[in-house]
Length: 465
View 1 (spheres, rainbow, N blue to C red):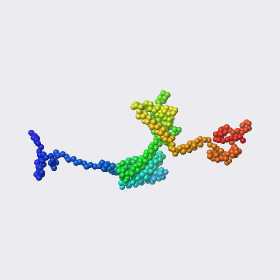
View 2: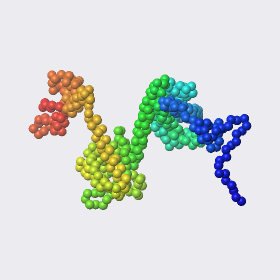
View 3: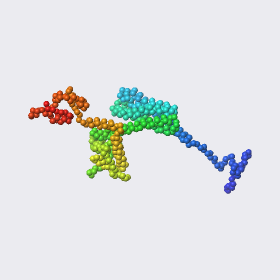
View 4: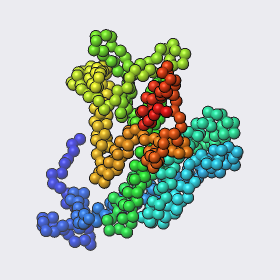
């Protein structure tokens, strides 16, 4: 079969009642569109970029506000659950315990009242005034952060004592499905985590608000207040973590002669390093503990020791005041390295086969020494107004070092310092108490040598009767 192909395009015949279209005329366009007619593209209307930016800000603000209200409701439900279980029910069942007087949930009941007011303001859409009033209650979050660590210690104490009523109550409440298996120590941290979330939400609300809006200034001030509380909470968390490390290291050191738990000391790092002796002896493995002011070198106790098999013996404590750190080997990418740590009377060579480990030790040592010297310089610098205070302190110290002037009054009482200066000097030696004396071969009275030396150092004068 042969298929015939049209040589020309078929022109559609005009429909009766319609006007014929001249295809050759370029100015005339058919009103009826065909599949071969080009598509008509509508040009978009030009919009102001400032208006588009404001619309994007408004959409982000609405999204943030919706998420904030939703999470705030969930947060309040958790606070209500904690208050009902560990405040109301606990006092009803364990009211005889001393811990029931102070409570075991911190300041969560007071925080619940403040957050209810915040949620009612957010439901009305008044975020600025709501957070402005909420900043007055941020002190409750600080108090709660301060009370967490003592509360946890009290809980651990009662758990070790194994009091039946407290253990039974805690086991029963933690098995509730509403708590999802979370212990009380974890539930106490919910307000602190919520404050961190407030900082993110407030930043988003302030950034997506118009600078001329009515609540822009209120949101900005609330953001600063919440940021201060977050910084305070972070400081408390770091201090608690540092104290926990110091207590752990103190429990690892054998004996009580070495005091690790000292106020102001910061834990930095610990780990095994090889101590290379300079006399050519064998390399010894030592456990090093780096703090903000000292470097502790310890060795493990004998593994067969019945009590201290898991502890360490402190070999020496090196102050960072006299420390100088220098890298000997390990400048390039290699297997391990060697560090020289010099002190006033001794020099240590620390070695490790792990390149990352020795690099971290070098950075920590250098950073600890630099920070120690910077803090010492800050402490030595005194303000112009503090010069007088320093002079008074030096004068008091000099007076304390001088020997005390002591005299006996007419009533036999010993007076010292300023009272001794007021004592009359016309008193005769007969009025004073008799001194110790001994009889020698020439029948004369002399004062005893030990008493004489002591009295001379104390400012006493001895005369022969």
